Image (tube, rainbow, N blue to C red):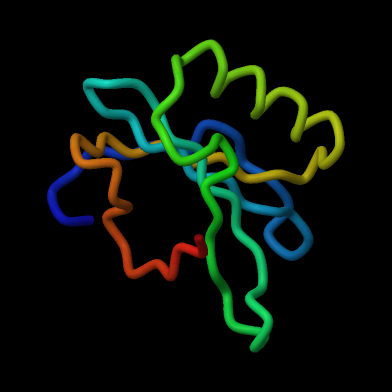
Length: 92
């Protein structure tokens, strides 16, 4: 989307798996985790924190989450501005 390259890193269960999005930029990576907002709408949180992290830190986070959720989907996008190339409500 938006002309940005992306790929599925881990294909999870189509009905039960959670979703992580990795945003790769020049200053590192941001991990977004999908969740439900208080109103029930789908939203995202910066699981890796407010600032971009090193690739090794993002990879370690993903590995821990995959141990907890073997049905996890992981999708990565090139994103120089660390903004997802899709409509996303990102919670503070």
